[in-house]
Image 1 (cartoon, one colour):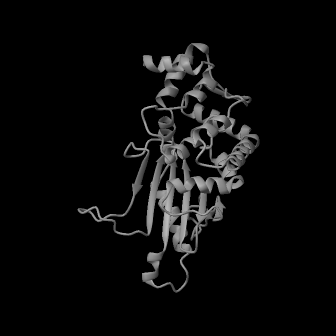
Image 2: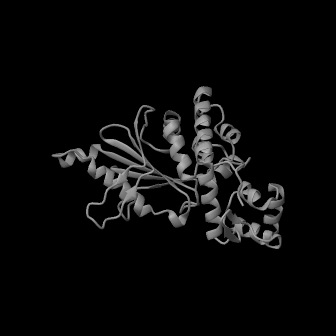
Image 3: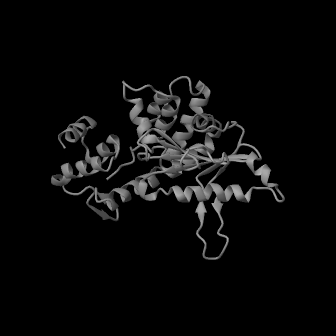
Length: 287
């Protein structure tokens, strides 16, 4: 069972939103590394905006975050935790729905070109191209020329960003630094991953304070959600009123291998199994 000493990573939806709201200026400053639209630290931020269905049986959608840069430019930010819960089509609907709702009445067709919509997908899984960053545009088939600059989608693989930061053979880009903090497992690690050049000392401390607040506020929710996810994926054995247990000791090795196959973080596997990260890596090497 996952216990309360577990650190809540920023890829957890509720923690992400709390930190974004409480350290708005710092997060906006960091997100400039992930898009081609300049984001002011004073930009308007909307957290959890609902898209109301246009008819009674329509589906309700909810944005993670929308950054309004000015009257013509905005950036949607979506945290996508797994491929099963991730839908590029859904996120595109978010973006275009907000774009159409905010076009001014009577706008002339040529003026639409002045608008720019961006979608930042923070993906906790591999991108289609297997790269840290991939960009999606509308292009003409055959010549690969961009058809419109109205929208652009930025996919950032935060898991790969985290790996890069611990790979001595790879250059540490500013984008990798930003992406990696969403996978960090402690306040100290977030600080180390950001380095000294991304934020001032005061800004970094404010960000860390916001992360600590999110951990205090949503510790129980995170533990329950993670335990439920492990149970549903068949990683841990069974559920009781007190929570989901890991099962018999004989099944621990199988459980660890199962979690490794599903790409869980070493730190989380260690919490669940009681094994050290070093022991877990040895098991992984033997698979």
